Length: 324
Image (cartoon, rainbow, N blue to C red; front, side):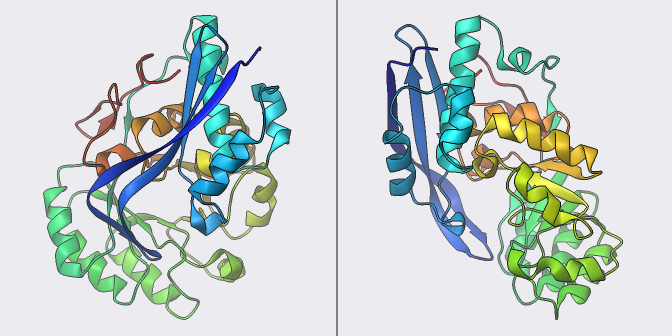
């Protein structure tokens, strides 16, 4: 593939209110968009640099811009390591290849047509009262993801469950629990019908998980990136959260999903707070996931034009105008 230009731009998308997890809060999503042009067709990809993984908008843009134009999707995989920069480029190549081929990206991946999927909706970390109010407003949704990771999490869970008694609930502690409060918090999760707990302990301390019994599946997020990190999860986790910004794009995400399933791990497909352009490629991986956590655009004050359709608790496949 003859690539003539690779362009990047930084975009800022206001969040509806604020988005808070155990590591802090933000009021806007800052994304990097990549456009690759071959002179006739253009492919786009979007990534979200994340400081937790040593990234910044400046570093991601610099990484992309120094690569030059003698790349294709295959050579890209070894040109830079997994992360946000490779994700934006990889997804842009998929989009370009689909446009050149004249058929959808899922066909390039050897898949059947994409189906609408039940999608979770995230409630930010807050006081029990405010989280209960948010849960009440979202009680008609099929699946909620509750951000925890601070003192008093059992009270938050109790309040959320009371406000939304029939909704399915997953929990994400974002490394915010400790070995000392792990048992208490897991017991609360079981008492209030939580289906899955994501990254309860810091990645550096997760060896503890190999020595505890748990009735609720535990999912790796910050402890897992791509295929290379899967071996470190044995005996500790029951599932992984695949995010394209961690795997470095759709190419590695699909390969990671295949290997994880062979290891007996269940799949969640997640995202950063982003626009539909970042979510569209992840829907290919999400077709085989047990939990689809791709609500980034729902957390924005406004999504980009031709964004994904979200309706009745479902997310629908992208149109060619958006991606792929």
